[in-house]
Image (cartoon, rainbow, N blue to C red):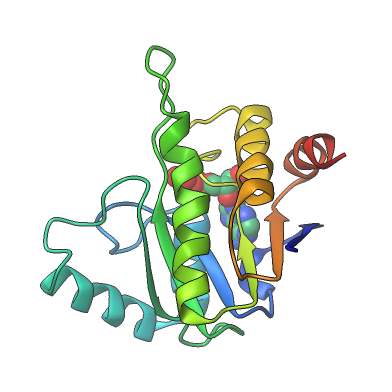
Length: 169
Ligand code: ADP
């Protein structure tokens, strides 16, 4: 059984086996949680990302997929980078958002990670409505067939925390 926890805070302060990053497909850093993870993780994270881009991810990481790197100076063993979909009012991209959570858990399981911290993927710059993003996150984590023992959603503000709490109840 996987336990799901909610905490309010900064994901870069978490002590877990794997921290999930809401990256962009370039894997070369960005704003929001991505910027914060690279800042605190230090150059080793970016070096690993560059190596992936020079190798099998030459075109970048596709939306909905996930890949692991070192966690550098973060208090974790791995960062799992996943690329959320940009919200669209005209196209239903929720399967891609669910895929981010599922693929990240699959990669975490392959690595042997037992505890994984997630941010609210796509709910920042990518514009996903918080309530719907929280529903997809919680439903996908609940339904996941995974060896990960603990999923911790780390929510940056009260609004995000309340949205996740409403779906966990
Ligand atoms: P995306 O491009 O996937 O929307 P963002 O980084 O813009 O990614 O935002 C995703 C979510 O992460 C937002 O809800 C934002 O408030 C939150 N966030 C930003 N910084 C942090 C952080 N340090 N820890 C946890 N969550 C964060």
